[in-house]
Length: 500
Image 1 (cartoon, rainbow, N blue to C red):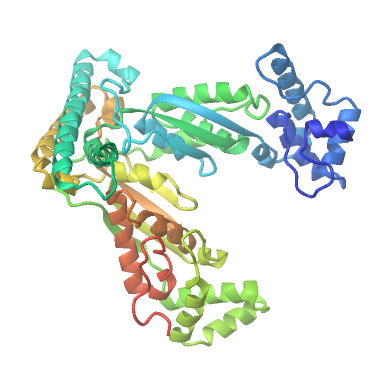
Image 2 (cartoon, helix red, strand yellow):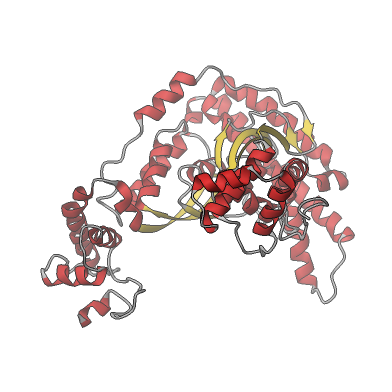
């Protein structure tokens, strides 16, 4: 058994970590436990004794790595078919670096599966490089479209730099140094604020880098999503992603292909060109409630769930008791469930029983923020720029730079429509971070506690903070006891009359 210490961190405790095994082997040995009364370590020891994993130790940088991976793949092939489902793949995890893809493609990748984890190059903290933009290959067939596109991307960066320099100068004058703050720290703080607002001039063609961590099943879903989509860049990215991940999970990704269903669905429902007048500047995000559940019914549902979990009642008894209470008493009960939440706590799982549908018209900058740190919201989203209009950052207006940005955005709309008639595949890459798209968010109360807590904090980006302040404000008016504990970072408590 001591040889097992090569692969597990201990031999005598209930919890242990696993090392030096390829991901596919770990996935299958975990699955093997579901068909065996023995523990993981016992099964692993048996497989080693039988020679099934001889030479499989995960190594890198030498010829043994390739051989170990082949043994792992063969082992996986022998065992995985017998389990009959994809959950085995969830135990195999890969870390992937992705560089030089457009912001459009990075969003599509993130939408491919909610179970992947991402960290992306932030335009809020870094200055992009001139010329670092994606050129759709279809542009090569039309020189006029190519020239228009290149001119738009060049001008976008010209405006970005002018906004950045203007905002840095304005903020340096208006934002005083804090007590004890060095000149360098003050400069960094000023530059960050300028980055945050100047980026509204950048297009979705701007290149980005990201790190991805995902299990085999989630990665497969994301790759199929990209392969089945409308963008050549995303399809090419899917092929590269599958090739690289297959080096670690060869069997799990062996027969991956586009979804005929998804591609057919897109053709069936394609009824227009999605052309849209800009509609000019908007003050910020718009929020429209598509489904706001009845307040009392939601109170009853949540109290029923909490009693079912902790009250010792079966469901029917819990619901009968909740339905027999007046609304004020229900509010008092619910306040007890959130009043001691700290900044880092999450509410009880029963909060997931209350579900909302919200139509958001938000800038692309806002949309990219919304995709991050999402733990449970589902999105049905329109095409880039499909909501009409654009968002001008308030600090750009205060600095007297709004004309510079709006003139460029109007120009970008004109160019976009010209390119639509010449090379429609390039149109989405002409949309800027300021342009708005429509997103339908289906979200439960548990997830809203997470999003409102995160996105209404003082550190949150102003655009997405506005959107979630609007959501929070509406719920405090309509569902006060339900949402009362959400804004923990900003210290906002429930209003008067919520609980007693």
